[in-house]
Amino acid sequence: MDAQQRKANLRLALILVSVALVFLAGFVIKITVLH
Image (cartoon, rainbow, N blue to C red; front, side):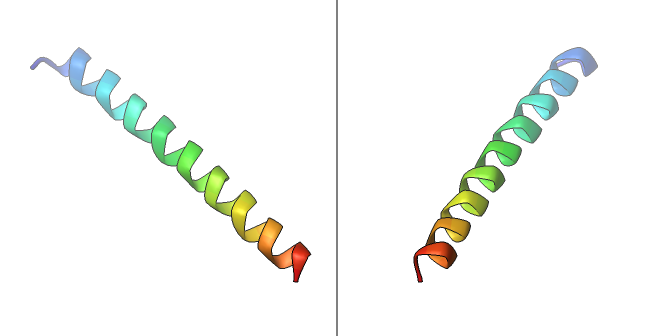
């Protein structure tokens, strides 16, 4: 695996983490608003 692939994988991982955090934040906000 060369540096270019590693950078692409890192970017993909960051995108997935960001999506997961946004989803989790939205879930928490929904629970907070409902209660």
